Each structure stands twice: as C-alpha cells, then as structure tokens.
Image (cartoon, rainbow, N blue to C red; front, side, top):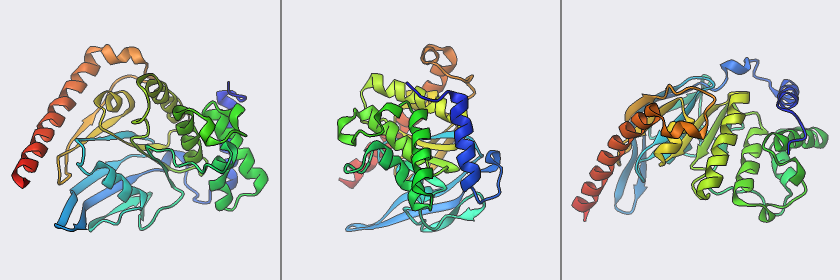
Length: 292
C-alpha cells in the first residue's frame, strides 16, 4: 500500500519540482515534441538500411501517443531518436523548442528489460538520477521515496531488484524514469515480457500515474489492444522502411477501465488498426520473399 495519498504524492512531487526545475516553463507547457522530415539510415554489411523514412510528427504537451507497427518497422528507432540515442540522418527532432542532439534528463526512458542496477537497492536505483543531477543525498532519498510510494512500492525500498517480480521491477523502472521530472516519458514495449494479468495491472497503474501528472508519453507497442486502451493517438508505422502511414485519434472516455475492451467503440478502433497492421505485415513478408 502507498504510504502517501494521491494528493500527498502530487504535493510532494510539486515541491521537489519547484526546487529542481530551472526551465521556467509551466508544467502544462512542457513536453512538446516536433519531428520534422526525419530519416534514419544505418550502415550494414549489405549496404545502407533505411529504418525510418520521412517521419513528421507533432506531439502536444501532456499527450499520450502509441507508436504501433509490425516488427522491424522502425518504431523503436524513431523513439531512440527522440531520446537522443540515435542521430537522424536527415531532418531534426525538437523537444520544447530545443533540437535533440544527445540523451538528457528531460526525456525519461523505460525499456522492455528493466535495466536496474542489481547491486543497488530499489531506493538507491530511483535516487541515482537525482543524485547525478546534483541533488543532495537527503533530497534524492526524499524524491525516491515519493515516487516509490506513487508506484505502490514504498515497502520495498531496501529490497534488491532480483528479489522482485517482473511487474515490480518495471514499476521501479517507471519510478526511476519519473524521478528526474522528465517532460517526456519514452516507453519501449515496457510490458512486453509480462504475463497477461500483470500486463493489464501495469497498464492501469501507468494510466493512473499519467492522469495524475500528465507527462507527455510516447509508448512503443506491437499490441493493438494495449495501444487503443492507453493512448490519445495511435501513430501507425509501415513495414520497413518505417513511414508514418496513419495517425488515429482515440476518443474513448477517461479514466479507462478494462470493461472498455469489449465496447463497440474500442472494437471499431481495434479493427481499423488491425487492418492497417495486417496489410503492412503482408508487405513485409513480400519484401522478405523478394530479398530471398
């Protein structure tokens, strides 16, 4: 159980943010992403590989979008370019008006594998980012405890990652990403390795956190149900080379519950996405057959 109420969590986060945020921007204005004419080309043993082609995308502050597409379509590459891990071959990406040239704390990242430090406790893992950003040990510990409470793991602060379940490890990963107060939260198939029931619980927990603090979220998934359930918009990418072929508004009411999965509106959006992904998957098979 959380040691803090939702309102206490919000007040604690806002207090920490006031101490640390030097941007001068209001929270509601942070997290604007602009992707302009982006290509990403990798050199391979068989020649250049175009992973992303002519990508143009605008994400508004506080929006939750999902990147959806067949395997190998470049959705993770595009996310890594937003994170600053990959440099576009052409075009540019800006977050809050600043061109992305390298990774930075304004863009928190959650991977499919939790990537926690196994030799650090849960609290130490979450406190690591604030410490690296210049927070005192006392402040970093306070931030860590606040976010561990937010994800329901306050009682596990002294535990080590290998003693936790997969879902708990991912909750620590989310807390660690949020502890730097990013304007953008980037999530690369973070629930893909979890069992179905844990995955559903994690989706609900993520939406509760997002609805409380409204970071901009870019979420990569190949699961259509997950994309429809979570997002404000679904950005569908084509088979390689990865192009944005659809941008679908998800106007389902919030807050969302699992009962929504059987609604007429949900099923219509699912069918629309399924038709697009099926066609792109067929295209990918045809490309592979030609290459073979």
